Image 1: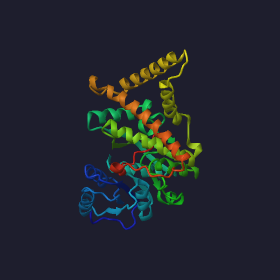
Image 2: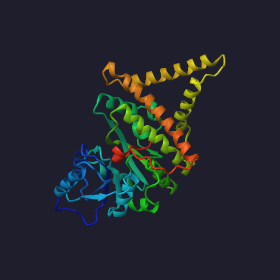
Image 3: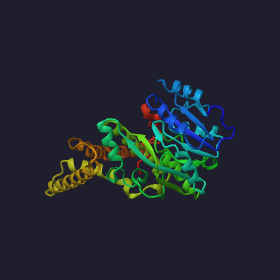
Image 4: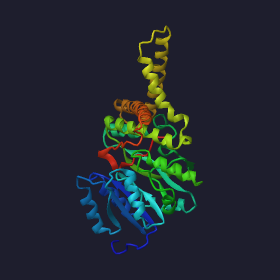
Amino acid sequence: MADNYPDSPLVTIVIPCRNEEASIAECLDSISSQTITDTEILVVDGRSTDTTRDIVLAKGEVDNRIQLLDNPKGIVPGALNVALDKAKGKWLVRVDAHCTVSDDYVERLVSLLETGVGGAGGRKTGVGKTITGKAIALAMSSKAGVGGSAYHHAETVQYVDHVPFGAYPVELARSVGGWNERLSVNQDFEFDQRIRAEGRELILDPSIVIDWENRQSFEALARQYHRYGRGKTRVMQLHPGSIKVRHLVAPMFVVAIVAAVMPWRWKYLSVARGLLAGSYASVIAAAGLAAGKSLPRRQRWRVAASLVIMHIAWGLGFWHGMYDLVAGQADKAIVDADRLGSGSPTVE
């Protein structure tokens, strides 16, 4: 492998990362074994303080397609733009630092790109390593948790408004200006909106699977979804047409909770509160039980808890983002420092 590095590779594979010593080796092994070997593998590191860089350099000694690049800005869009600037390939495929993919993953994405679409992606499947992590993975595959985000639960090939860890023609990505570095979250969704504005379609093939290590605790899940909701408001400002009714459900749910706990003097308030609480609890319980069938019976509550956390954290984040807009702080960085390379596509 080390003697076959192409001068002009067909595919540039990009892996943004920071402090990913626990997962980067497995990720690179799955990329090095791809059926398409005409590739360059650019690992763009955001100044890791663990052994991530040492692991990447060691892997590069075995497979000299692997290159370590520096990302001084420390955010995902910065890493993607560093790679886009250096890319020699015709196609660019982004892979998350704690994802693993099948051996034909890149080949199948390239086959989709060769049909003329603007971007292609597969189905993102959460991987839990703790009992809570497994519950979170199940919640993220439920429509009750992620709504219309087809890449979590789609079963048929379809055109979509966003793909996770997308693959794109390099020249098209350059022509739209790369990734917006004023967005430390939601930059992948915003980028896809500019691709679509060029009249190019995005295609999702759910049989192309991305195994992605999701958050493993409720606290980490809450932080993640708060960031998602907060960042969504900036995308809403940049691309008003991308907002759909489903995006406003969680924020309105938060408003309903606040209204329900306020000491209003209204004779029908207790009835309204009861109906709200009862209806929501019934929906969440049913969705949690349906999604959590693979868990031990005593642990299925964790799926329902994950759904509630996702809804409330995203809704609170949205209102935090609205405050940012009003206060003129919309471009303030929202960096998840301990998981920068995780990419974590925006909840739609």
